[in-house]
Image 1: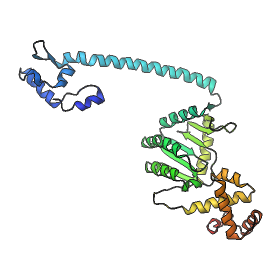
Image 2 (image 1 turned 90 degrees about the horizontal axis):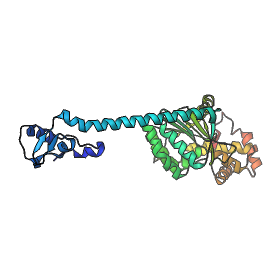
Image 3 (image 1 turned 135 degrees about the vertical axis):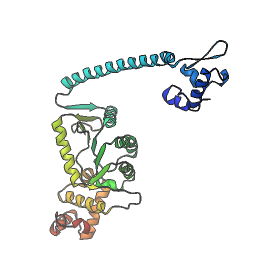
Image 4 (image 1 turned 180 degrees about the horizontal axis):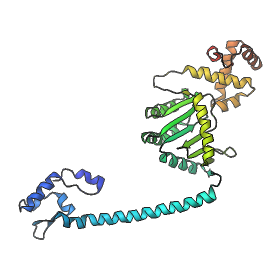
Length: 328
């Protein structure tokens, strides 16, 4: 009985077990009964069972003809198919570059096409993946879909850097995702306000929403080296200003959220933006914006939005050198 038969499930061929090697040596001497022959010797052709039931040992050189030749022919056939496929890809790539991508920018239409393209590019990423995700916490189903491919890329040695907005620091699903990718080696930081969504793979292709269209149905794939350098420069500048998000399950509401986010809310309010506009820019609800403004009003004793803006300016609470956010 072969003791290593489980390996056949992985390779398609049974390996010669220790019992098989011992039996082959003995059958060469004319020993052992036919029913004692290990299955691997019969399957690989090293032993032939004659019509009378007797076992005949086959020299390995002869067995190789029936064992190896078909495999070599199959490999040669696969190599020919592979060469044809590479040739087809090269020909289509030449047409694509000469006709469809003169500017280094192309439009991808449809959510399904966008998702499929992004998945393919992320799976082929080898060195670096940069992502900017504005809009606060992401939907749990999107995070669950992205987690396996992101972790797989990290295990391949891909460096991943992601920028979120401060508001994700209280969003459970995003924090759970961050915890898992951080454990695999990803770096995550947050800012009060993030530029539009951006994904850059290996600094060779970038994806941004098409600002002129419905962003879920249209995306721009950018392969122009100059444009990619520009986008990476924007990302790196934001990365330097962002704050690391080191999340642990026992973490409480970070002081940064109450301080930096409220500071950003008040700065936009002083500049004349409505609650709806502030909420859209900072990735939070209008109710949260109103809460930040209400708490600041209570602290400063203001009775109107205009008075609050006046008191903030008079006290210099938003000045860069003042620790204003701690007081508010």
